[in-house]
Amino acid sequence: MAALTYVRSGVLQREAYTDMYDKQMDLYLKREDNLPVQGQQFYTTEDADNISFRVTTTGTLVALPIEADDTEPVPRSSVAPGHVMDFTIPTLQQSIRITDTLLKLDRSGGRAADMISGLPRAGKRWLEYAFVDPINNGTTTTGADSQFLFDNDHEHEDPAGGTYSNVETGAALSSTTLSAMYNNMQKRTNELGQISPITMQKIVVHVDNRKPALEIARSLQSPEDALNRANIFKDFGVMIWHHLTNSTAWFGWGDLPQTMWGLHYMVFTPPTVGKLALPGEDHPHIKAGFWLKIQVAAGGSLLKNMTRNAGA
Amino acid sequence: MAAKNARNPSVVWNYSGATPAKNRLMSDGSATWKAGQFLMSKNDALLYECITGGNLGVDEDAINYVAISDLDTATTGVDTNVRVVNTVHADDVYEINELDGTVARTAVSQRYDMDVSANLCTLNVGSGTNAVFEVVQPKWVLEAFQNASTDTLAVTYVKILETALDAEKVAP
Image 1 (tube, each protein chain N blue to C red):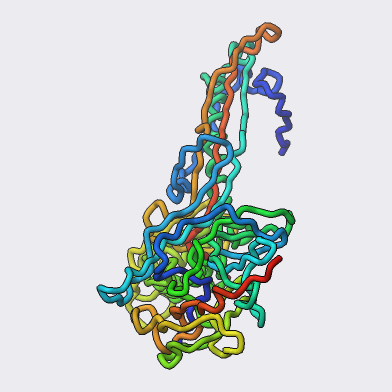
Image 2: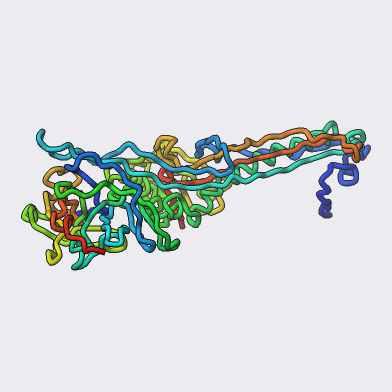
């Protein structure tokens, strides 16, 4: 079987698409793009007014009141400041253009013109990779508190609150290890060390973990043994995130309000497609072209709402 | 027994009135400190962090201010304007962690050392040889939900001894 060879010349022209003016061709099957939109649900969209974007947190919590008589001065407290994180928003471009000849000789029923639709799809796909990147690299990417995004030693904004962990001891996904993660998120404290539980809403898994994840979510009884113990995670949310690269790792997603998710989709110029000024003076037969420009970044500052288990 | 998480001192009662932040003071060019540390203005009129030792609260090592923000000039080696809580008053009460142990009611009115390690300022109930703090109350007496008598690194309310605040400066 001969492999197709072609070069990306930067222009859709007849030499590269000889099949499309072959009068003997009876059928042109379109290679459809079928990309589920998955990553953006974890992100908070922020409007950026610069390609540098700085994030911090503010709080509203002060220390608990203490006993003080009417004749004593009123004790005072203050709110802990936040950790600061800087992001740089990259500029990304792409374009596609097509010759007059390919359009005119196209026997495929408009497929040549349809190829141009690949441009916005490229932007959409870039976004999906961008959204998963902080998660895929969260064990080696530093967040706002100078710890990795997934780390067992995140220092709270107020040192009095101690530290918290958003990584579990690596273990394969099961109702037992899921319960351990659930409980650890429930035991989370706030920056003053006060009880501040996070309730896990769903597990996020690589497709390789689809079976144990769905068994946990659909079994009446604990799925790993024959003891008929109740499965407390029945009807639990499961998301199979196809862009995850680690096939064993699995994640818990909590119920913190959106401002505390710690995943930011920073938009300076949203994915934008425009028309190139074609045909140009020197290339009258490059019939049409379009550009794509994106100035956005997806990044994590403090992933309090997500906990990782490396799996096994 | 729970271990509290050590942090630098915070003002709880301020008897000296308003606490404006001053930014006209100069730090020593090699100074490094963290917010909440006590500072001393030495004879050269520059600010230094208070450190553990026999000189603290004596002569030019009198305790003067509390830092509001971190300072790291060690890399630049230049004098820097800094922000501090206004002059420490003998009646001001600070919340501070004990170095490593519990604090009992019997510590009230006792006088103890300051320990400063890696820019972390704590109360050393184990030593009174160079006392600069007087214990007002262990915090667990006044706030029992998050604090207990069994806490190590116990949060404690202290004053700074007047003698450590008013030590005579030596003429430069």
